[in-house]
Length: 185
Image (cartoon, rainbow, N blue to C red; front, top):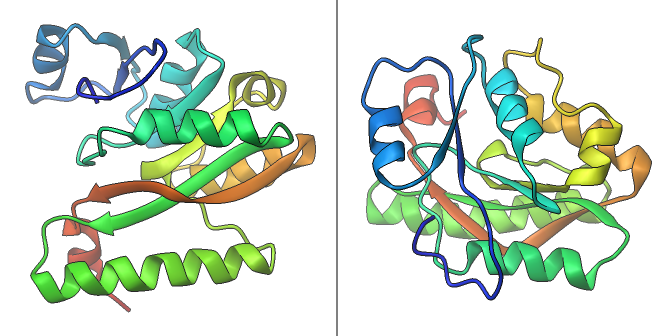
């Protein structure tokens, strides 16, 4: 994220759920603002980071995500050119799989998200979501009681304040380790 090519200013906040590895130490060495959340739950961690953010837009990703250097600019441009959009989500591709699985994820994910978007059944994936801060605050952010699907719940509530859109140009790569553990089906 620190390698972003962005025409404006942005802040990076690492919301840490009391991790026991070197996440906080590494983030501090990179000049990142750290928010420690005592409740170790993605919804609470994301919410704690967002509540301290000062920017106009909130972009969310995960520790195992790889974002391209235009990620911030792409999300910013999308909001700026779509004034009624209060939440956007992008593609999420696998990074640590064989070449066939990489290519398959780059075909299937946009196909799935695009089709679902067309029929109004949005499927935001927390590794690549964004919201306008004003609307995020209006709905009181994430439901911190949720253990999973905090991203879907957020978008179901925020869409009452404006439009939700899939941003096909916003792309992030993530580890497939959880999917591998659960199985593709």
